[in-house]
Amino acid sequence: MPRKKLDKPNFKLTRRKDKPNWWVSWTVGGKPQRISTGTEDETAAYSFLIDFKSGWESPPEKEYQTVNVAIDAYLAYKKNEYQLRGDDIHHYRSTYKILVAAFIKIRPFFGNIKLNQLTRQLGRDYIEKRKKDTIRIQDNQKIKDIKSPSNATIAREIAFLNAALNHIKKEGWVGEIPTFELPPSTPPREKVMTPVEVKRLLAHVDAPHLKTFVLLALHTLARKSAILQLKWSQVDMKNRLIDFNTIGRIRTTKRRAVVPINNILYIALEEALEMAQSDYVIEYHSKPVIDIKGAFNNAAKKAGISDVTPHTIRHTGATLMALNGVPLYLIAGIMEDSIDTVTKHYAKYQPEYLKEASRKLEEIYG
Image (cartoon, rainbow, N blue to C red; front, side, top):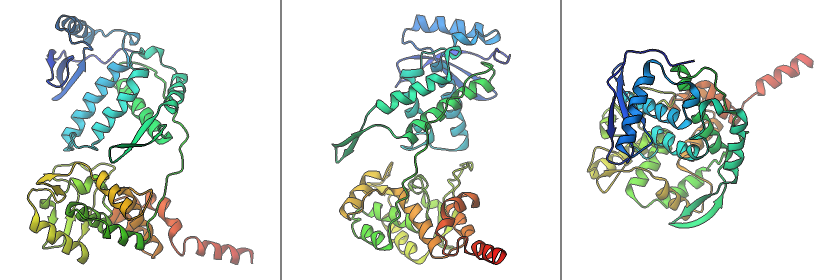
């Protein structure tokens, strides 16, 4: 099935400073689009442009399109979508950068395969290949361990590939196209720190920016990215409120809450505000902190706490609140998760969880 016929845009060759290849760029419905020519040679790129122009009204059959072309089209679409939504695509852990990193793993295996050559078996072969790959874990610039990527990592890569292929299908490039199976999921690590461990962690946090981050995470249960992107303009010290939804950012499934500032957090923010030298709450040498993982890991190691990440703080807070009888709807509110998600993960920690149901069964059959 050919792509939908559209008014012919103004196609042109462009080149980015940080990328050697030539690209074909155009605009559709006010949205910029681009696709790689796959070559650094201007003459070859011009030939690609001519073929691409002629193929716009009567595009080539799908066997002439490769997975690399589909990935480039999808990335162009997503980049524009994130920018319109107000997301910072240059942030270290932005969704766009995660997409790009995943496709770097995907391209060597799938990139030059034509779309009509794709089979579900290729997906299975990719899983087996990735399981044989190794990744290096570094600790203080030294190789700590070498292991294969987890099923969760491989599943994320395949999910992104499925999304790219589904995108070009919706655009009318192809008719039917296979959906690749995901590897079986592994049970998530559910490390929960005790209150004693939390205090020990705080005792080993030396850097002011890390201390502010940890206290924000402990007392708001916000995600790491939301805290690192937090600006002072989002902090209302007078009314004791923090709006984690960045100004201009369209709300997504990763929703961000407006949370109150309790007394402990208020004191910490007062101290941070006195030393502030930028618009960002979490700053280091007057600049926003791109990632906190290294500093956090070092503090956890000094405190003698293993298998923890910044996300562990969020999970720990929700778990401890559930264990202390905080209603699930309130936990969902501060986490900005759906009540269904919170019930699924944290109802089991409620002291009275299912006891009433058990008592009713006793009455019925008694």
